[in-house]
Image: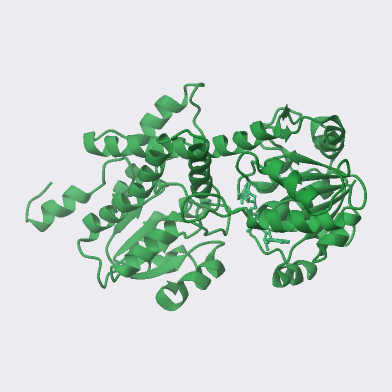
Length: 466
Ligand code: NAD
């Protein structure tokens, strides 16, 4: 099928490349000239596993990039909207990009099209998209609007798109359902998975993609509710971690204990410095806003947000309790991406913590395996940049772990110990084992677990053996 994808960001670009994998012919549109130029030259502007390979494989064959939205719509049977829906100050989703592309689409419609909303939008947006198309001259019957929310995770975006837990299709009409069926047929029939060159399946995948057909309003709520629930799971476990710290229990044992209950599940039970990224914070706020707008006060979501922000404050308090004063302290920082596997630093708790530490007068030497370029654009010369984790640790009064990159888990603790000025590690992602840190003589603070060797330091500073 000929398909247009409007918006070539984290979702649009991944969707476009993956739709090519499914055999479709895709025009990926953006209005950011610089981004288009990069894509045209074969560069991939985001860090995402398998994406460079897919783009290299399909570019100039099934995949092309374009700044001409009207032409892309005219030559396509289906049009995916994948532009941003950022949050406003009051929590409401800013739908102006969606409205703007909808107006452009309406002027280009030249025959029956299915307009598919991939962007995360509040309930009734798809209805509005239909209205705007009609108001701007599209003929009734010349289009259908379908809600098809995207659940991919950055860092695993390609795999998530091709091996989804579910595909949600929100429409009450048969004609667009037939089009959607055709688009996703290689996944729902399982034929894509038999392909020898298919992207490798994740461990938990069971053979075919499941489809959930529903109304557009339910599909819109599914996306908001899914993200709000996941954010709640993270805030819940972070709150439990706070209790663990108060009573000397171990959050990792607690997570194992509750996560093994199949009703709860082990995933998304990682205590740390809280959630971030371009989705959870804005989607929690937008879901609360739209609920309020329709008469329901979703106050649980206030608490989810409050706990999330508290994680950062508590982490900085931990850094203070490890290092006493922060002004003039040299800190090695591992990670600025909001999570591993991505270079995305939007709403990154790691970035917020770095900014707070800088404000307190600390000096930061930063290393991230993927997000250095993006960090440079935001932090500029206020921090220094290291080539690797060991360089970030060299001469540091303390090493802070802010992103859960696998690379950091593999660090040689003996080498790390020799690089540090003070043998202090404050781990906001619980990537190290307290026993191993103890063995290496490191003073180690993490989340929801007892500090290691901290008492020994206090005792020896007071001239007592511990
Ligand atoms: P993004 O900011 O990375 O990409 C959006 C792209 O749209 C940009 O490249 C921008 O230049 C382009 N754009 C804006 N206006 C345009 C216009 N008029 N014409 C053509 N292009 C235009 O955003 P994203 O992270 O890809 O998110 C897109 C949507 O998908 C959001 O609603 C988001 O909530 C949702 N979503 C994101 C993720 C994620 O992990 N990033 C996951 C699921 C859903």
